Length: 393
Image (tube, rainbow, N blue to C red; front, top):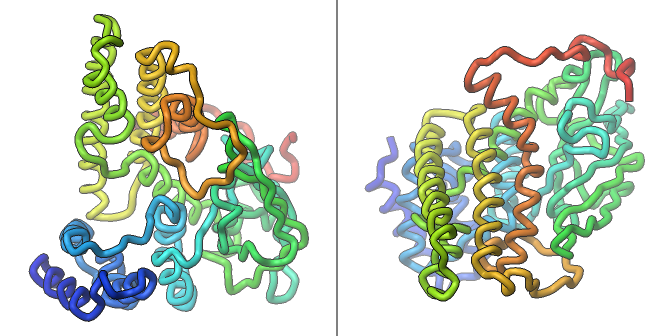
């Protein structure tokens, strides 16, 4: 069994053979993947060594100390946090071998084609159709709120392949090449002024059956793996104490005594404690992941993440007074990642409004926590056994 000492030895061998100071960044990342040091808990040959997940920190610490480059995880978060675990669990060996390496090195960016204008909170109601023609599926429909679609080479896509069965049972999961004919990406400008999101139109896009993940009609079950990992990726990110948005407000409090009031002090203390509780809960959740796949508990983390971000950013704007009403730049940009802490208070306040929508709305996540975590009775669902084609739309 691979232990910490063995991982340190392998990491030192990687650094000796590929010194970060003299090795091209992409060459180093490819060598790291091939050495099994990308994500150590993955199987051998797929960037890992089948080692305990908790030992990834050993490798990361050694590489950081040596000044080795990382794979810019904020830019490729959808691939790392959502596509990769789904491919690992449901992909064929050929799919794993061809897709995982360039995904991890960042050579190929991924996006997620799930939500639709009429199927966001009720994702299972999606209407994008995939019809089998020989060895291909022909896909037509529209997706929305697609982060990084303007950068992506690949997308994870769910589409309806059987309208004659209830909505959860007629969905199939695909890997879509975003460079294929018929894929059109249009920017969606947000309240921040940027177009971080997109809408994607699919017109007679042909996807080979070899790019299907899981069985035909089994897409909802496959999608649950993606969604559970997404919520952990959003709400359970590892940060240091007083990291993230609470750190920005605390720093302003310390540096600007002229802004302080008793009421703001009490609110800041309360949010600081809540942020620390959330951080420690995230640590515990990630420790639980060592034993297996994420479950519905990640919904609670993501729910709390959205609420805290919105309350903390609101406090920051109030603390700054008139300065908090300023906004640095309304220019139309298409960024490659979200930068909460590198921007001003106005940006944080506006961008955090999306936290309660993206990755599952807070209302849907409350249902998930109630039913799947707490075991409370489910709300009546009259459409559960009705064929999708017969649903009112």
